[in-house]
Every structure is written in structure tokens, then in C-alpha cells.
Image (tube, rainbow, N blue to C red; front, side, top):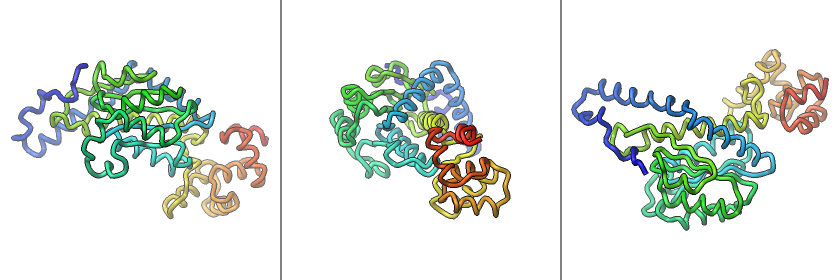
Length: 298
């Protein structure tokens, strides 16, 4: 395995004596390499395949699991958690598992990532099945916890993908689909919370967001299934209704209440000039796609 995540970066060997401005400029220059790596066919092609398989899992009642250690694990937990308010899904639909459990979100848990048995046990505790899909995350590409999880996932027939930042990563041999997003040596040698973490964050954003769009969680470019859990999000929900239908704020607020605080239902009620029951029935028949629901009602 080519271990570029641990290699020294020739552009930063004297970063300790640079001025503040030059350090920041250097970090920024290095970060700009990340989107170019993602745009390459060797990343975009398997990412497309992963998304399509994740969507297929969701449609048969399956779940998406991210499994990782350290920064990679934390990023998986973050992406999973953000799916809930953004797309109105249950916390069970997308889940992030990190070696060492919740404590590992804020501190290092000694030895946790070195246990293949731990990765398998964490997925087993969630009753992983063939309907589910597991994405193993490891910047280094060799984390035993992730390998154990991927092997267990394959043993129960779940779909698997491996995401790493090294060519020929060890975890790649343990998954059906593979992304090796090689962003090169870090500004600070081995600090994979930087470019490696950034490429993982972008890829997870792309994966979960695209999957949710394919499930009808977005109308136009509006997050119509947003879960209004605070004042800001309640206001956003009403403004989403306004943007989708062209009504004023007062009308949007009225329909927001009539639709039982579901922006998607309110939009269908307004645009199809129908009641709550019909709007809900049409959305159910259309698998949650607003455009399809409107065609049903018109």
C-alpha cells in the first residue's frame, strides 16, 4: 500500500518558520487540491455506484451505516446526525459508528480502532441485515476496526463500500465498491483531519445529499422534508413553502399549520388546491415526490 497519508509534504517542510499569512496561504493552496481529486473519474464513478446502491437499500427498508475510527469515524457520525434535521428522516436510517463509541467523539479511546472484532460487534449490535449498506471510512486505509466491520457486513449480505486516501488501501480488498481519494501528504505530516478529512467530508456530503434527493427529499433545490425543531427551522420551513408556491408569508404560515408542520404536504395542498388527506395520500402514492404527487392530483 502506498502510504501517502503519512508522507512528508515537500511544500511544508519549513512551515514552522513561516509567517502567519504564509502558513494560512500554504494550507489554503493544499486544500484546493481536494475538489480536483473528487472530480476524477476514479472517484466519481464508484461514488455514483455507491449512491445508487444506497438508494436501493433505502427503498427496501434498509439503512446506511458509516463505520470508522478517529477523524473518519467522527465525520461519519456528523453526516449521519445531520441527515435527521435536514431531510426529516429517522435517526435509524443513516447511522455513524465510531470505534470506542460516543466517548471517542471527543477523546481518543486507546486501542479501539485496532479491534476487528469491535467493528463486527458494533454492526451486529444494530442487527445489520442484507437490506443495509455499510461504508467503511479510513483515511489510512488500514484500520482493523473498519476491516472487521466490512467483513461482517459482507457475511450477512449487506452492500459494502470502502473510502480511503491511499492507493492500494487494505480496506479496499474488503468491500464491493472502492473509493481511494488520494489527496497527498498533509500540511502537518500525518494529520489526516486536514486534507484527508476534508475529502471525506465532501464525499459524505455528496453521498447522503444525492441519495436523499433521489428519494424525493428535495423539490427543486428546496429541503422540503426539513424537520422544524427550532425557531430558525420553523421560519425556514415557512419560507420554503413560500419559495415553492409563490404565496406570501402569512399564507405559508397558515398552510404550515394546516399541514401539521410538514412543508412538503403544505406545498401539495397549495399547488393542487386540495386538503390535508388528499395531499398526504398523493405523496404516499408518489413515494414522497412532490412533482409526481401534483401530477396525480391534477
